[in-house]
Amino acid sequence: MPAVRKRAKTKTQTKKERREKSQQLAASRILKEALTPPPLPTMDPQAKRNIVIVGGGIIGSTTAYFLTRHPKYNPALHQVTILEATSIAAGASGKAGGLLALWAYPQCLVPLSYRLHKELATEHGGEKRWGYRRVNCGSFEARVTKQMLDKPKPLLRPTPKQEPEAIASSTNGGGGVNSSSGEQEQEKGWEKLPKQDEAAESMLEESVLPRDLDWVDRGAVESYAEMGMPGATETAQVHPYHFTRSMAALAQDKGVEVRINAQLKSISSSGDGVESVEYLDRGSGETRTIDGVTDVLVSAGPWTGRLLPRSKVTGLRAHSVVYDADVSPYAVFTSIKLPADFVPEHRASKGQRRKHKRVVDPEIYARPGGEVYACGEPDEDVPLPDTADKVQVDEANCDDITSYIATVSPALAAAPVKAKQACYLPQHDSGPLIGATSVPGLWLAAGHTCWGIQNGPATGKLMSEYILDGKPSSADISSLDPRRFRV
Image (cartoon, rainbow, N blue to C red; front, side, top):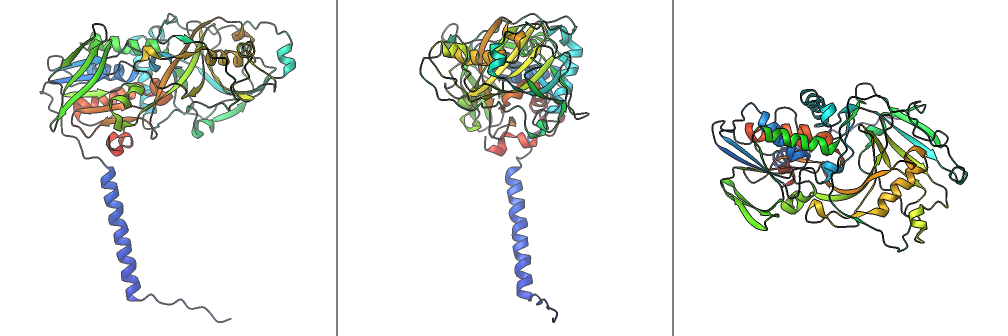
């Protein structure tokens, strides 16, 4: 068979290919330039700054803290004010799980923030003050049969692991409890909170259920996996309410002014940047103005999208319960397969069907101080209210959580429930937005979903660098720049 000879390219074809390649490179360069925000101006360390932080959650409180610890901070030149519509840590920052993990996301924030958590605890006695500690972390699959539920079970009496002196229990209110209606609901699949991504799940290694995880029914557990990748699996925790309030208090000690019941209404700006803010004093009903403002950080969690619609930050409601129970320190992700005819008692008594299909996935975190926190799935059933103290709690959703957990933990089934609560997690399609906006002096830090407590210290430190240095230096978070998303 004769060899096939390739036709030589003509000069016209070669020129055309070079032209097309040149055009592609030019288009790529233009796109990259469009997506790369321009550098911010260098900050004058001797200039007076009037900085207003909107939101007294974890992001606002840690930013205030790190501003007052920044080398350039000068209380004679720098005024810092937190405006909080209700009270410090009234929203998700007081009702989250408080899990800290090196396998969290986004990875541009996680290592820095995890390290800062440890440093803050060491410097300020975090073990006693906000319950900082290492915690074991794993995931189990359980299968519950009708025979298991019908059979009387002996009450397990777990022996709690000795811990440093624990924090006091919180009474972080916000939102009354509303009973569920008696309407029939169609079973739905469990919607997991966006906590374990594929990278985290890949770190799970099959293991035997630990001996000291004695508050889980071993007879129901079919498999257990623990975080098993060296150097990336360390997990810790804090009590989010106490941690957030401690950060705000430590900032106040250095001169930060905290105004509670101060609901932001508007931000005034000109071509040169922000100029003033107007807020409602919910106590007196009067509208007040702060003039001469140089910087405004909007870190209002799920309410950020209301204040800055272009940010597209929204809220996702999540229910949780807190048990009065002293158990060994484990954070566990569950997958529980229920009997086909199982209906929680609180729904059966009202003639309702089960809300979910047979597999449910509540998360359970033991806490110091004789508490166990458990959270359920997120929902979008009720729109975000005006303020955190108006969040509606659906008691039936909380009772679903305790009913499901009771099938695999007799110890928690017998434990008193000290709180039924709900909050709204701030979310953005591309992850958190942290940095400058298109308006000079207007900053944004929001959209951290369920990792706000974990990533709060890093966000606060980086925002302090943005505001006082003009650029962040502790981590590369260019991918989170709000200006990349036209904010």
